[in-house]
Image 1 (cartoon, rainbow, N blue to C red):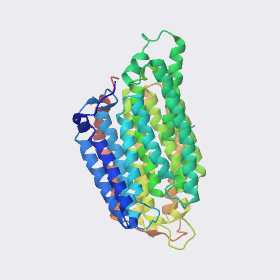
Image 2: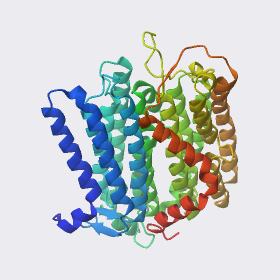
Image 3: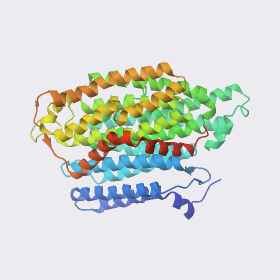
Image 4: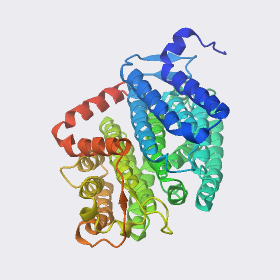
Length: 494
């Protein structure tokens, strides 16, 4: 039965409405503006205010309600994950504000696409039905395709956008076919109806059960493409390298949060009866991602490609916690993602502070690893922050990254995955090599190229906040542990 949208529904969907109306207003402003280049910094500031307002609305929302005949749900879990998405969006927009005056490729469409992408992520996080799930995925994906090719005069950016679009369309087709199978065999699109259809007492026909398993596998394949887990990772290095640095930061952080939120909701909710099947699948994806990401990053000389393979490896660590199928495992995933946001945003904020002098035949921003040699001598503050982020990524105590991996490995061991936890530790050791190599370049080598350093407040703020979070996490770990526990309690009975 079709459901009418009431004012009470809109009250609970206020962040989504704010994203949509703001995006449309900024789009009209950009269309009718005579001098688009001059208004870009103003549009970015307005976007920052919009995201900050949405974060305040989300932070004070403590309701638990299902809307529009079960299409969407609002609870503590959605509130927490939307908060992470908004933090990533704020960091990205702040970084963009720091450089948009000097980069001619930024157009008024940029903040509009960011807002529409976040709107799609909000729908993914709040979805409670296969229809709303696909709607959110497509709104996010279409925005990201355009962002990937935003620098239209760059052959690399155009190539990256084309690869991402083709592979993304394939993943979308796989996802849609999987959703069709699940709907056709379960007889419903609502998550609750699917969970009932998958219960052992309901299914009498084995072929029907395995058909649902096949549909579930296709759905998982379409979603893990968004987090660039192996073997759906092939787009990430090229896209990360080809797009402008602030967009790379956005790709590296924000879409992964929404995709993991969707995975957690599916595995805990409608597909919980298939735990034996999906544990094996998620575990295989985790091990492949951890190992391949760690070893492939060793040969990289480009910082953005290294971050792509690093991201693949980190998604593998997160999937290891997911594979446990336990409350502690799901909680470790939320902790890992929360700290990953700050570590990754901090690294990109540091890189955006560094530029090649005008006239050199290189890209504007430093993305060649060896050009960071001697950075501690030319810019000790940025070198210190970057070293802290890299050590945290490597899992060196007492930084936050160590505790993120610690919680994941403990959850895996308690679930009986001792061997795979050891594999994860070994992959982390391999990953430490390429992180520490960058630190070695910065502190023990002499500078080989002249690098200009610029730290406007819009770059200094995300860099400083991220550094404070990862270095002070050891003092207040319970704050994050309790927040993630409260978020998960809203959607699980584990």
